[in-house]
Amino acid sequence: MKRVQNHYFSVVAAFLVAILFLAGGSLSMAQAQQAKNVSWRLQAAYPPPEKIMGYWGAYGMAAEIARRVKERTQGGFDIKVYPPNALFKALEAPDAVKRGAVEMILSNGAYHVGILPEANLDYGLPYGLKTSQQAAKLLFESEYFKILRKAYLEKHQVVLLGLTSTSAYNYITRFPIHKMEDMKGKKIRTSGAYGKVAQAHGAVPVNLAPAEQYMALQRGTVDGTIFPAYAGITYKMFEVAKYHSWPPIYSMIGASLLANLNAFNRLPKEYQQILQEEVTKMVKFTYDISGPALEKIAQEEGKKRFGAEAVFVSEAEFGKFREAVKPLWDEWEKKSDYCAQLVKIAKGFAH
Picture 1 (tube, rainbow, N blue to C red):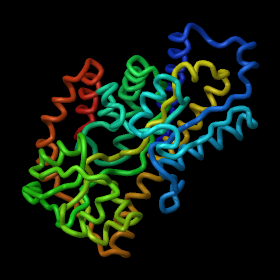
Picture 2: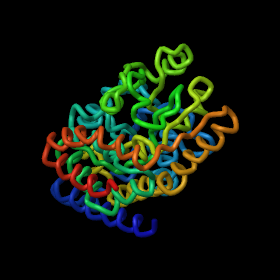
Picture 3: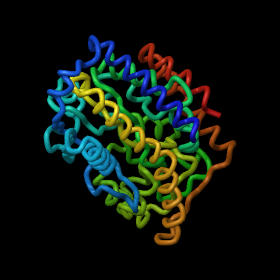
């Protein structure tokens, strides 16, 4: 992962130069000194607690980054982290950060699709990659992440500081999935693009809030859900749904860290670099350590504590699951020039 890290830092460095150019030049020393004491607000799309089974959850990632930034700037740059809906409703947060009503958010691409279609591709393609290591290569050993940042900057007026990975997204079901035919007619709780994935596999998507899924699974209102496998333990869904399917639908799903462009450009250059460095460290930790660890915990502890089974489909069956969603790849490719570039790169990593 050393090469991945080095490439990521080089992408970040080049991008910071581009941001300053777009803003009309770097900050003067006088401006930087005036802005030495800075207070930001960050609203997270995900609630506490900070840690999930010993590893940073999405909210915890934001809180820890804020603490590290404050420590490194000796209190000069203070980022106060708010839970979902504290400042704005979750679906209003993307517009809020765009217009500068809040300086920073921890979000998810699904909330931003209405502003820019490229956000649908934050984490690659469904059934495109199998592991977080492959996902890291896609994002940081190609032009993929750089293109995403351009799209967010030009269309959204925000700086995409990083994409963390909480864990994989899987089918969690009341029945084992050994082949795609097992999905036919099954009711799967999901929403948005995930609903299209389930439908492509022959299932019937059911739009329910995550908070309702445990009861729906318990009652048999739905046969499964699309959610991180570790939630089988944290939300005790393995009590009512004993199977989780691997390889996952997405090998990584996490959170995007976004800053308002004008607010970012008003920061002293030193603070810009510190903020970006701390986000980068957290991103690397999630791909190297926490994401894979949570997958292992879901598979091993899920079986030990709940009798849940991790079902790995064969290579041939995985190919069928992938082929079924390729029309979605083609659909997203047509959304914009940037989408076309992203899908083309992601297809090259899908093997």
